[in-house]
Length: 100
Image (tube, rainbow, N blue to C red):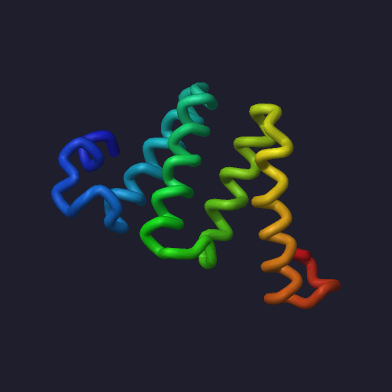
C-alpha cells in the first residue's frame, strides 16, 4: 500500500491511490496502531469528499471512520458520521428499516 502512495503514478486522489490509503489504514489498525489508522481514515474521508464533491456514496467509509473515532474516545467527532448514516438509512430503507 505504501508503495502505491509513494509512487502516485496516477495522481494523489485517483481511485487506486485512495484505495491504497484505505488499505494502509487497515494495516495500521490491525497492527495495533489506531492513532495512525485514524489519521489515515480522516485523510481518506477528506480526500474522497474533495474528489467526489460530496460525501454521498461514502457510507462504508463513514462507518469505519465513525467507529475509529468512537474507539479513540472522540464521540463528538463520530456523531456527524453516524447521524449521516441514520439519515441515509431512513432514506434508503424507510424510517423503520433495519439500518435506520
